[in-house]
Amino acid sequence: MADTFLLFGLLVTAVAIGWAVARWQNMSALREQDRLANDYFRGLNYLLNEEPDKAIEIFLKLADRQSPESYRIGRQTSADIIDTHLALGSLFRRRGEMDKAIRFHKHIIAQPHLTEQQRTTALSELAQDYLRAGLLDRAERLFTELLERDVRDTQSARQLLDIYEQEKDWVKAIAQAERLQGEEPQFSSNLLAHFHCERAEQSLSQGNFDEARKALRQARRYRPKHPRASLIGGDIAKGEGELALALTEYEVACERQPELFVLIGARMLAVA
Image (tube, rainbow, N blue to C red; front, side, top):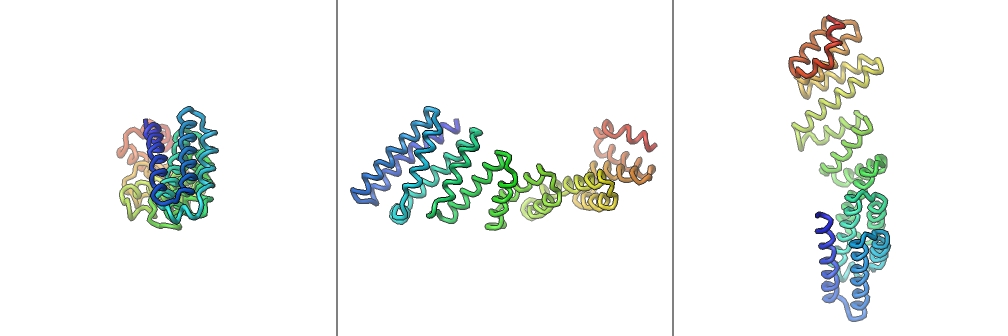
């Protein structure tokens, strides 16, 4: 349904482009714009007939045919064209056709007469393409660039957070969660407790008890009664031979979240 509405919107845009240009351009240029409008309809027809490759070639050529003069004379028309191309790229991403989405959005970014807002929007769309395609390093670079452009860009900060979580890069994930804390304190506090617990478990698996304890203290700073923090505290105490402390931590974890007993019953028996 969303794709149908988008295609309908593109048809309306094609008509609007022809009307807008008629107000701005002379007759010679208008004939060229008539050809542009016809090409738009051809491209949309290919999309409706499930021939996206043919549609892409037409739309990309249309973008190349936009002259600097058209950006100066017909600003609204040019903005509509860019918006249409952005929408097409998003359409391909929703369909899972990532190579086509990436191709569209990269082509937009390469255009020389974009406004700063258009370039930022195109960069964001391309970053989302890379993320959806699993190209995490490329997505990370673009989302980082977007954050450098606007430090208040919480969407890019959240996307980076997701990337770092997938990569299990807890140091960077913590930095991003701290960045978001001013905007969403409760959400960020829960995340920070979770990430510090992950760091503690990572350090514990490497036999680094000092780092595990430091990370655990940070987790408890954000959520003092976090059941998982007590569970990890028990594992640290057990690893260092402090069995009584380990049992206490395990019991506290079960009190705070009874379902944990299924996971740690055997550990409790081992230290009892």
